[in-house]
Length: 263
Image 1: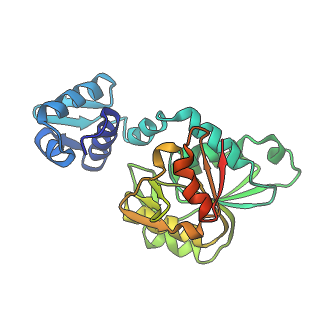
Image 2: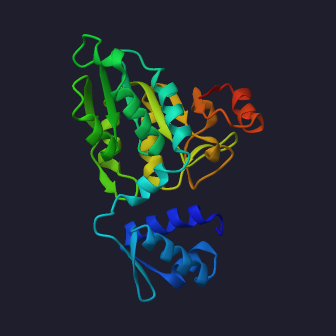
């Protein structure tokens, strides 16, 4: 996984958040690059005040436990905002909406939270949101037009998502009109995938409880596969992606019966 510098930085930040520290030699072996490359990466992350350099590695800054999510949010930010506004437009007043964790779904939550027609619909609340993402819950809890339902579960610091049986058990008892899924990969053969099996499990449960499954993904996620499958393409109704997505990547989804919307 040599990849780009940004991909390595994200991987290093996730490792630092999970383990509390980064060892140069271990990180180099995990990412398939030289120790010198990792040292340069850590020097750059330290310059950005994301980590503190130590002898042989680095430690995550005490105030920066949420940096991986924030760092990812800076990539393709404009595309994610456009995708989110188009996706939020699919929701009508009175709907019950599911949101998993992720940078694009966080933007969907913000778009829903600031839609004037929902805020002024006269219903109190005019929207119900079910989420396993703590950061999304934190943003929506102050919105009077939103009835907020948060799953239980064990929190993953790298993504703010609640996972495990306490998260999935609640979903058996509810139904959703729409679920908006952020994914790590979306492939016409393998479907929607996530990098962590626990996240994939609750994302799968959200999808199974929804009448409409909407994947929100920018071009960088299309044609990619991650470790654990969320759901097959046949269970996805709509893909909202950015306007730059090439037809070679989107046509296979349209051929599989997925409505493709470009934002």
